[in-house]
Length: 340
Image (cartoon, rainbow, N blue to C red; front, side, top):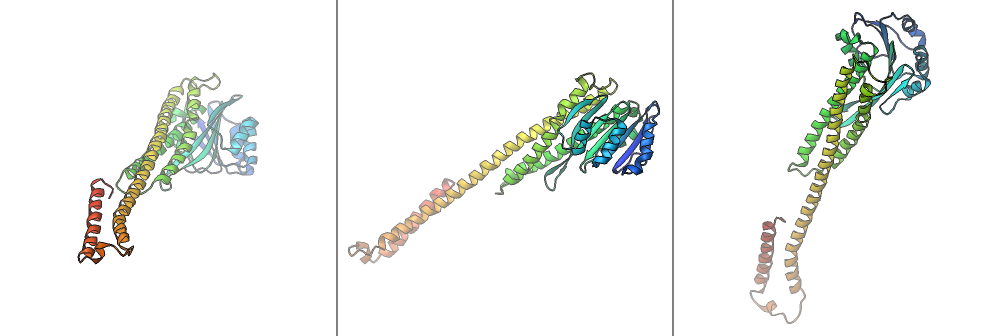
């Protein structure tokens, strides 16, 4: 049976490690409607394991299922409230990994985030998702088309979820890079549009992006070289190492984007300062040009009795010519110096 395309409140898939086949157990919350799934969980075969997927569960729904899977109360509390910093913790024989989900919305230059907690036990996996972003659906599809991975047991589910989530990180980083390139081109174009607000908004989203990626790097590395209780089985380790490498590259890309945004923001602020200086030079130049005619007119507007030029036939044309020539000379000088 194929993977489920859209996550309901609860989904349960039983995997056979020998054949690599999967069995989807129909179930709907609330509790009364998922008894068949819980009954199936209690009767797993020797080579079977279960993957239970919850989306935005209520407290009663999660507690009921946690009792069935024997999860620690502290782990249940983390999964219920969400908004956990990416981390990996061991609760008995269950490894709990918290990670952020995200996607980039180009229209609003926004990074949408959510949360997933993955509880990996000896014969079961529970994923609890908060938010609209669901890499578990892609992870289920990958397991469906690759039965060889199913034979690796519950750790294969953890790998598939991590791999799908990290792929969304890489895609988001690529989209952020494209947006940043467009902003950079606009900042250094001939137009005088101030993009400071857009740069700040993108920088804020990149910081949120970085908060999702940076803490997950040591978690992924810990699955490969951490304590024996948290370390991956040797068979799954090469696949997790590949995920850790992709995550490391994405982390470097996000750091680079953050640094580039600082540079673009500095360039934009410098250009705004240059525009303001240009405007002040133009204003000063025109003020100087108009100051000369104003001064000449002011001198001849004082109406003193003894001003020889007042009685001269060519006094008025001479005053006008003096104003025009002085203003023209100043205009030419300012143009040559780049002030106008």
